[in-house]
Amino acid sequence: MWKTPVVVFTSLSLLLSLSCAGDVKSRSCSDVRQAFTTKGFSLHNVPHQEIQGEHLRVCSQGYTCCTSDMEDRLGQQSKLDFEKLVDKSSHTIRTVFTSRHKKFDEFFLELLDNSEKSLNDMFVRTYGKLYTHNSEMFEDLFSELKRYYTGGNVNLEEVLNDFWSRLLERMFQLLNSHYTFTDDYLECISKYTDQLKPFGDVPRKLKAQVTKAFIAARSFVQGLMVGREVANRVAKVNISPGCSKALTKMLFCPYCGGMPGLRPCANYCQNVMRGCLANQADLDPEWNLFIDAMLLVADRLAGPFNIEAVMDPIDVKISEAIMTMQDNSIQVSTKVFQGCGHPKPAGMGRSARGISDVFNSRFRPYSPEERPTTAAGTSMDRLRIVWRTMQHSVIDIKDKLRESKRFWSSLPDSICAEDTVTDPDEEQCWNSHTNGRYFPEVVKDGLTNQLNNPEVEVDITRPDTFIRQQIMTLRVMTNKLRNAYNGKDVYFQDSSDEESGSGSGSGFTTEPEVIHTEPPMVEADKSGPQPTAGAGHGQEPSLRLLVCVLALTALVLCWR
Picture (tube, rainbow, N blue to C red):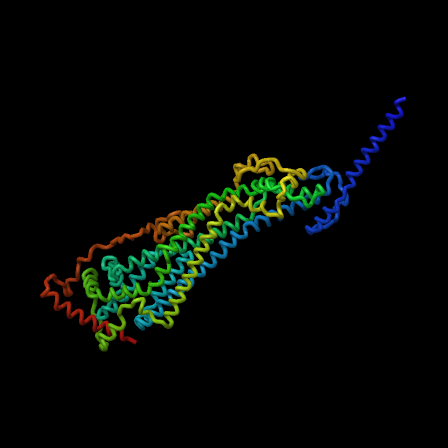
């Protein structure tokens, strides 16, 4: 009696379930096909209706619009999209270091060029052929300064010491042209430079100013270059298998579920990005220290290590040193003769003419107010314009550097803040399984904090060696910048040489210590005239010597 109705009910239930199953199977994949076309993929083998998903390895194995081939292609696309996101988010910081490095480098080299032109213009007008016949030592000085700035293995203090030694040798010969000097004798003269102080205090002051300014400038431009290189390298992410799987699931599993327009929840995106960029976040502490050191050196460039304060009046300072040497020529010559012996007299074949006129017109003081208003004046105007522009550039760089702090740890935030990446609606977003709220907490940044990341499998025991190399690069550069801030020179050729004792300017202090490597000049050549302490005996020979020096110096200055 109840048998027939039961059979009928069972049959109806079976038909109903088959009908429902048929409805699920028949769900269209048209939206997915359209999204696939938008991505530039071929529609070959893309199903029109959902199919069983047991073949999928990343996305849900329920009914799906993805074949295994589609999942593989979407996996590759997720890597490309991720690389583009990182590239876009890091574009500004990479551009800042690239453009500012180029600009600062161009400005500084132009500053050096204009400073050299200014000195040349002034000295040609002031000293005429006396300068042009000896201009190679000035050219060599600027050439070595440029080579030092561009990273050459140049000992800056030795360059400056050599310049003053060469200038002393040339001037000593000109002021004592009635003698013949051998190379050994000239070498003896240079050994007594520190004790003689023929140029007064100018060499010591100029050495301190030039050394500090150039150390700061070179370190700063090298820091900009290192920042540029590190940013470019770290922005090229190494995508691990665990990250690749998580990216595919976040960005494209909604496609396979028939919801290609559904974007990830913001917190879901955060966990995926923090897992994929865990090693980049570990760069942040050293990056922040590097930025702080760059800002310190930038302050030096704008303040006590101001390169304009050094290079603008360098011609006047050297001219003052020459005047000091000329004023003290008698005392200097006497002390040299005592220490190095009397040289052999030279021939007297040239006639004297215009002694006082030539002497006074060539060796005379030259102040900034007397600078010519023609070519040299134009050079100085260009020099000041370039410096003002570079000052504004340094201020701009400082602002950009401050903005770049904590960049790498905040990179996941920047990426997930993109409207095209995540959905602001926390209730209507992709939560890794379906359309709805994402409940897991967001993990902290850094490799060690990824142990409990719910979205990305990260091996916290194996840090990225490439990122660790960049951390070491920043650490070395930071130490060099700190040294530069304190006026200490550093090498850039050997990155392992943190603070070489043999480096150019190593051990530099605010007041450089003068080290005397030779005994005091007490032994004199007994065959020559000896100065005495008595006024009656010493005054007459000194007057004769002075007249002789003036006359013969004038002859040299009149040579064609």
